[in-house]
Image 1: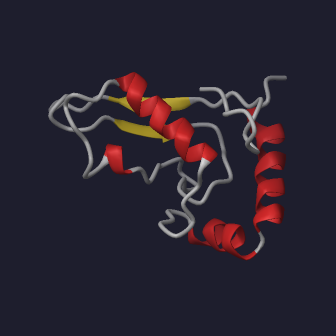
Image 2: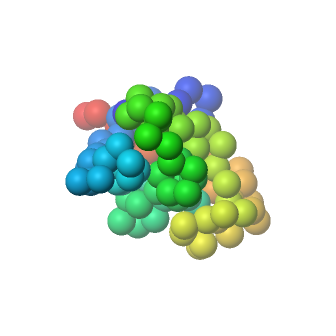
Image 3: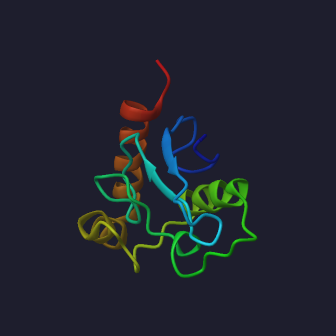
Amino acid sequence: MSGPGGTPYEGGQYKLELFLPEGYPMEPPKVRFLTKIYHPNIDKLGRICLDVLKDKWSPALQIRTILLSIQALLSAPEPSDPLDTSVADHFIQNRAEADEQAKQWNAQYAMVK
């Protein structure tokens, strides 16, 4: 997945793991980042805190919609509902510095060399 333009993740190519459980489409797919990313709603294991992957799941949602929702999350982090509290604190206390850290991780881990 490409990092969205106008964000610290711009230009990055992120690898995600998508697992369809036996109960899919009645159960949401399991999605996680394999590429390291600095984001308050994504933890060190790549797990994603996103409502459509949990309680807001609907069998009508398509994989494409899920990926677009993940891209939207990269564009608009929610530090008030974090998965990684230390990253969320950084985003809340000093957003410019946190964005810079996210840019550095993007350059280090997500840029195709």
